[in-house]
Length: 379
Ligand SMILES: CC(C)(COP(=O)([O-])OP(=O)([O-])OC[C@H]1O[C@@H](n2cnc3c(N)ncnc32)[C@H](O)[C@@H]1OP(=O)([O-])[O-])[C@@H](O)C(=O)NCCC(=O)NCCSC(=O)C[C@@](C)(O)CC(=O)[O-]
Ligand SMILES: NC(=O)C1=CN([C@@H]2O[C@H](COP(=O)(O)OP(=O)(O)OC[C@H]3O[C@@H](n4cnc5c(N)ncnc54)[C@H](OP(=O)(O)O)[C@@H]3O)[C@@H](O)[C@H]2O)C=CC1
Image (cartoon, rainbow, N blue to C red):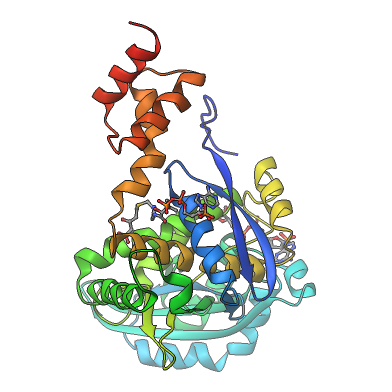
């Protein structure tokens, strides 16, 4: 799959439980090195299931490819020349990928964006808007962008330079919503109403402060990235799209929203670009990616995108719930205890034994793990 290979690097693959999305139940494979993520997602999914589950939808799978044209004295004139040949350009793009067109996809439209004053002179950037069906679509749209470049030069008299997709997949959005009752969130110490107020307050912090928003959004990606990796998708592309989406209002902010509805229920939403595929890239070459798709039992990229946003929302809900109450460390460190035991030198059956004692005493430190290990070995 890649160059200069010297081995493979394994990561744990787990499954998140309890997810009901649009009335369908899913077991979700997740590949990640960080403890507590899968437990947290499964915990929240169980609460959400009791309130009707996650409601998710997606837009059409439209990707953008950019064709940059430089050396223009009249960029606005060039724009109109390109737009007047819209049909010809779309036909030229679609001639590259008969399979995609037969599947109902293909180039749908074009846009031209003008940048009249760059340090290098005027620039026009044509976008091919391509329905990539069940693929992530990067290779597909890149091929189209390269193929139409000579035609764009002929039409404008300019020089085409870059021809590449945009990872700001703003026409390919996935959205998810949850409504959770106060009763479902109540604990023995905290009422559901209080919990909701605390969680909405945690969101408001992320909405206004980019230092907090970066961490809040990292928590959302804690849920999404492991499924992207498990299914052989391109997690750099998903991360790039998510973070530019987080700044679309002019300042970096939360990718989720959390509010209280008229019935006092917690309402959470997540919307973000989701360029994922179930064909193409590594999805069909990595045997575990193929297995992940079988575990999910899904048959379209749209379904995968819906599951991604449900996971992201669940993960964010878990982190906010923990942060707004007892803090993240108790739950997280208890599950991190196995790593600490291994660092202290535990092996085999010793790992679980040492980790259990560390977690039970809420004292998850390497030094303590070494002491426990010495005791266990009778030293
Ligand atoms: C970790 C827990 C769930 C422990 O939660 P807990 O209440 O300490 O422990 P528990 O064992 O009683 O588990 C509670 C429930 O979780 C479920 N559960 C528990 N484990 C599993 C499992 N393996 N599979 C399926 N379900 C599981 C299970 O349903 C259980 O209920 P029960 O029926 O036993 O009463 C909780 O403390 C939690 O949600 N913490 C948040 C953890 C988290 O967000 N981790 C991400 C890493 S931190 C980070 O990187 C992001 C962050 C936090 O910075 C983002 C941000 O700042 O916004
Ligand atoms: N900036 C970025 O994000 C970049 C990412 N990449 C990489 O590109 C890869 C993804 O590209 P992608 O175009 O998805 O991969 P592929 O080119 O491997 O697969 C897409 C192709 O699969 C065929 N296909 C078969 N069935 C379907 C279907 N149901 N829906 C859609 N297409 C179908 C199509 O035509 P046909 O059979 O004719 O091939 C289509 O062109 C990833 O590995 C990514 O890392 C590459 C460059 C840049």
